[in-house]
Picture 1: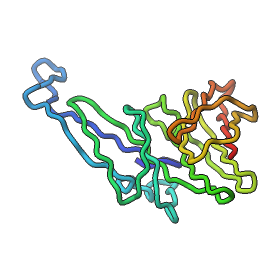
Picture 2 (picture 1 turned 45 degrees about the vertical axis):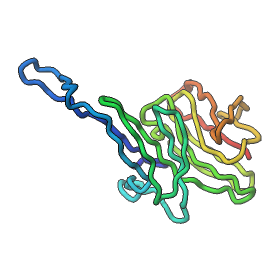
Picture 3 (picture 1 turned 90 degrees about the vertical axis):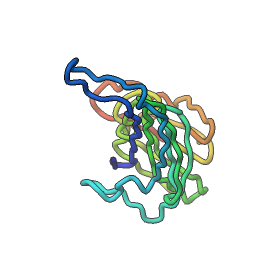
Picture 4 (picture 1 turned 135 degrees about the vertical axis):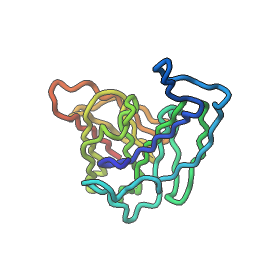
Length: 191
């Protein structure tokens, strides 16, 4: 599924489960439940579909965030990630194109609110200010906001106020509070 700024791939292992018309419930047949391994790639996202296609010109690398594993991998569009799923489990992959800030060549990709199943769906706007080496993201919702950045930011702000942030394994994380209104929060990353 393609969204405004990211894509999402849902991977599910439903083997051995099904609807039982007699008991009118889902039942598990453990003899048919097996580990499933699959491959997923950024090219599995329909980037050109929908009302707002995501431009892919000049994009060579993608940040892929695994919701359950809470890990990030960088993949070229031609590369795959292998995921193994036990019966009745799932993994959600948020796929985000990596942009390069021209002034100091910082690589950057928005991931979203990682406490939400639709992580990237929280991102409402994304803009860069090349003169100030700044990335500005409009976010709807609250929770832990993560982005990929090849370098640690100098500062992070939410709605103009400086906030504490973490930087580990090339991921920047900030806590976005619940807004006082229906407006989106604006998260800024200064490099």
